[in-house]
Image (cartoon, rainbow, N blue to C red; front, side, top):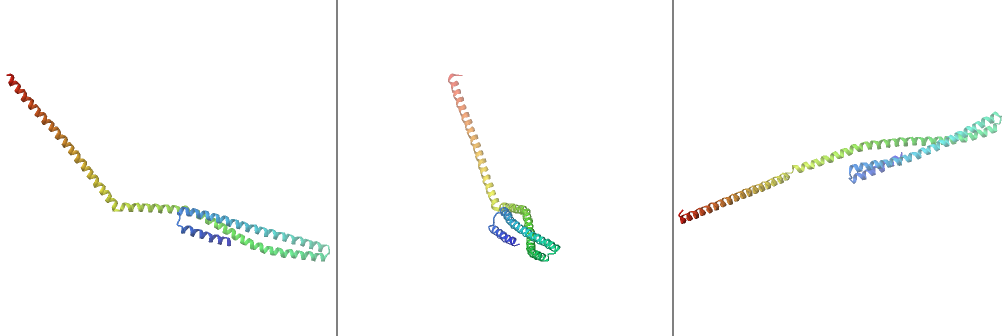
Length: 224
């Protein structure tokens, strides 16, 4: 299980490094998934090597068992032929292969137990990666919701700031002043226009009076 302990140590180191950098949560989670995938592939390679070693030991064990069985048959054949000396030699060779087979059996069993544990660890790591992928989506959604909430609160703080409304009040007063000045200018121009018109009428009336006087004088001169 040493491979998984080492992977755990490396993975924790990577996580702490990412968190210390305070990166964007979504980017950090995506990178963690990538790192976990790489660690899984490394562990998978180690487990595959362990399985290969187990198979080699099992093959060697089977070969020694087969050889022991062959010498056992030779011993039986020697006994059947009444050759006890040859039977003893065959049995001695059988014992040698039996001893080797037992040693290989112990080594294979130990390797098989280790391999089974590695397989279980690999399955557990795979499940954790899948769980992390599922949680990633939830964490990203929570992060975006929190960021949206922060944005709303920031906007609300700006709206609640009295300086904003003071600015609106000053602008409103300025607009009122501009409107009043425009109305005053319009009224003044209208008044000036009426005054010019009255003056023109006075001049016309004065002009008509002079003409009438001149006409009367002309009539008097002509006795009309």
